[in-house]
Length: 293
Image (cartoon, rainbow, N blue to C red; front, side, top):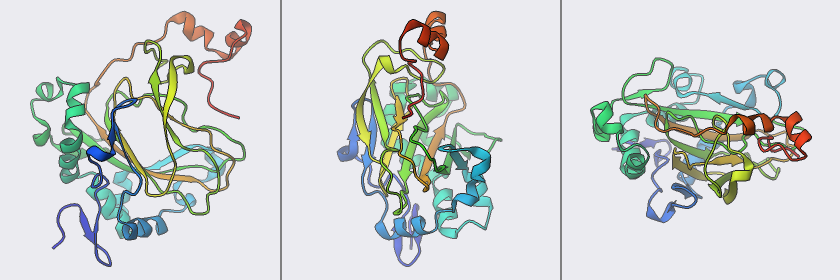
């Protein structure tokens, strides 16, 4: 009999993206994160990869532009039988109580470091959190999502995401890459940063002058990276060379129902100086300019 987190499709294959996460895959620098180079059973990964939805399922690219992130959330996938069964069951597991149990077992210590008051404020410990799917009518203490994502093809090199912090309600993020074997482009890697000056933010973005790149996670098939969200979890995507092939991945998300931390904002002068015309007048580069070449 298959246990929780497993599916029988031409044999027994484990679904849980966290199965290989442990002390050997975890690093505290530049902030706590886990990185696994071969995440899913190769047969299961191959089955998911072969049935990853076509670009046309996500969008009409003429409507959304180049190198834009387009997402299909979990609630659409599990409710729509046009998606392959293997994908619906994979997504359904990753928005379940079983997955939350696995998640807080592996990352609960880091969650408590970021928001030590969270359990007492919500009146429950992590193990008794009520789990719901992120669908606009969220309830419970933790809201899970498992999104299929593409970054649309582009004719020029650009970054889809410069250095930033995730939404302050987000407790945890995971990324599982489904790089197309036809994708020969360079770049599109996840970059992790550390602060070299006191942290300041423009909303959720981080000035390049305050950080340095500390680690690069290659955009490679079946590779997985995950991290608790915090004011130090600065990450972005390196510029990707022109490509007619979309960048493909699954984005796993755990949200809390309240704001988890504050982000000290840059002052009015620095905010004004970050505008392109002001930066040019000051004779320096715009510190918030998106990464393009």
